[in-house]
Image (tube, rainbow, N blue to C red; front, top):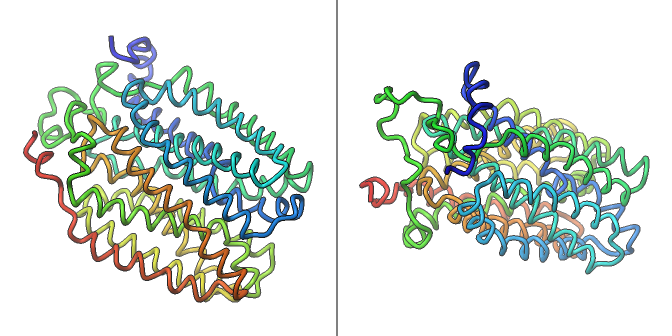
Length: 426
């Protein structure tokens, strides 16, 4: 029996009005939003209160964050295999429960070790496992419109950027940073557990449907579509240059986006802006991300993937350079807008690239391994900025230097090709 065949009546009722995949997409977007407690933009608000409460430096916090994110990344291939074996619905239930518990435990951190363990749990269940499961599900339900669907899913991230930092700051001011994490954990359970438990279906084939809602007689649209039973195994993907070019680009995007999220308030305030203006850059970036992310998804569906990927890496270069030169309100607004477009590209790329080049059959294990490499980048990201600021009291020089890496990756991206085994149907 298919994993989700216990819900055909519900699917039929909803399917009379619209394709059930759109409901799956909405649940996945909600999951991306609910990953906020494990994301860097939420941690950014807590850096100051945690440092003051525990009496530690920004380098210590960045080091704990980096080590914890690295440890969390190592578990993602295992999570990917569990998704392939048990399906994203079951794993989303487990991950949601554990993410809420991790929030509660993090609020009780009493020292750097506890802080690091809390970071590891939040990053693994939130930024890692929750996002992996959501992207995996949408990739199964959409094929020809996958880029657009994944870009809509990623709007959950922009909503989190707009909501979680000011919400966290409000909770900190109201009840303190420790109690704030209690309420973040409870909100995770309230948001995710009911829809995942009652509405989630792993794959369209499990309930007699096809990706994109295409009918069985529509052979024109189905031509060239990916079957649920096609795709490279992980060991085959690892032997392709495509896998490592994609990994290099996503590694850089994850590393640099995380560093900007984590230190954005500190970067802007060190260059002459007020704390309030620096915090408001997050919602501006979120608005730009909302406006541009569907365009990124459409571009991936319509144009050559390597061109769009290279363009996104160049946007990362622009984000780093604009952050280095943001010293007043106009330049801060320019940075916030570019960073919003950069987030739109990054979020869509992370979900889109793996099924695009390696198919659906073993998507979980390939996603897990690729995302592990990306999260390792996230673990390294804050360190150069934290060390540079502690040593020379400035972020500008290191931001300009870091811009070289995505520039190199953009050139490499132009050489991406679909692996031969996938194109030949083997």
